[in-house]
Length: 124
Image (tube, rainbow, N blue to C red; front, side, top):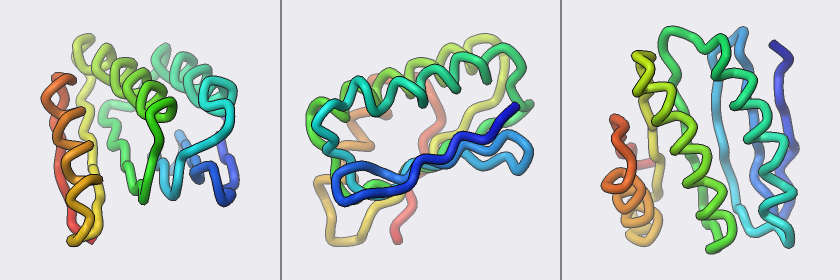
């Protein structure tokens, strides 16, 4: 499966999905003007990945900030991963946050209550 890499900009996160190296990570700031368009290749990649997923998928979220439209897209990503889990594949979500960033911790906590996945909260 081809690697998906999107370079981080001031308004959009770095996306690195690498099947061979078992790396799935979204990091940086997510406030693109068109969140649906930005996340479309990510959702398409995950859809393809769902056909032949790894035995264990560890998704790392290392976000500094995201806006409401990005939150909706992140929820879609999490829902896709939840479906994988429901099919018997192990999925772990690592939610990274800065110690002083209670908002980012709270955002991850809200997602963890909405999605039936194993969340680990990791202070950076």
